[in-house]
Amino acid sequence: MEKIADIKAILPFLLKGAVVTIKVTSLAVLMGIALGTILGLARVSKSKWLKSISKAYIEFFRGTPLLIQLFILYFGLPNLGIKLSPYFAAVLGLGLNSGAYVGEIVRSGINSINKGQMEAARSLGMSYPQAMRYVVLPQAIKRVIPPLGNEFIALLKNSSLVSVISVKDLTRQSRLVNSRTYQTFLIYISAAVIYFCMTFVLTRLVNYVERRLSVSD
Image 1 (cartoon, helix red, strand yellow):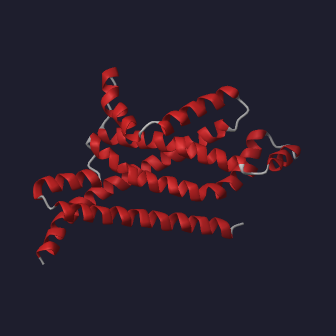
Image 2 (image 1 turned 135 degrees about the vertical axis):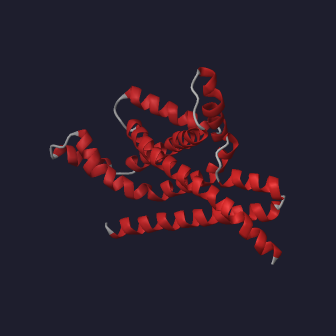
Image 3 (image 1 turned 120 degrees about the vertical axis):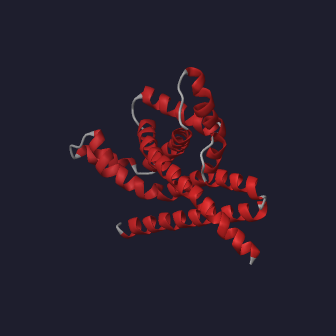
């Protein structure tokens, strides 16, 4: 009974952190999709400088730790006179990082479409942007849903890193509660269960979208 009482006492604090985790991750996902789509299109464009810039961006953000990227944004930029709030730095850092991975996923999805699709669309009088928008991308989207889902699930779990820049997400709330109660095992097991529930729901959502798109074929 005592353990149940302890859980009831700490759960509101952990759920408050979980809400912050969901908000930060959701905004980062939206940013990652938008940025990643642009990067993916740039990677398959005919422009050499667009290809070079997008490739350099992707290689940098995929080749450096997310934690270091967050440190640069939150602790490094103030040295240049740019100060970001913890919340904004968290969303920006996660979004910039996710955009690099989404960019590669989008590129792979586009390249998986038979080149004859683009050629056929162009022969019908469509411009390159029109063919990409109405013919290639709709087919590519269906193919990239599974890897995108994996990326966003990983992003949700990686969001725990934002706790080191003072964002009161689930991980930081767990640490704060632990510093007051010292119920270490109970607190972190509870946090792990909450993270599992969030990733489980996200996985089911991705699977649902994938099934819906398969039915529409």
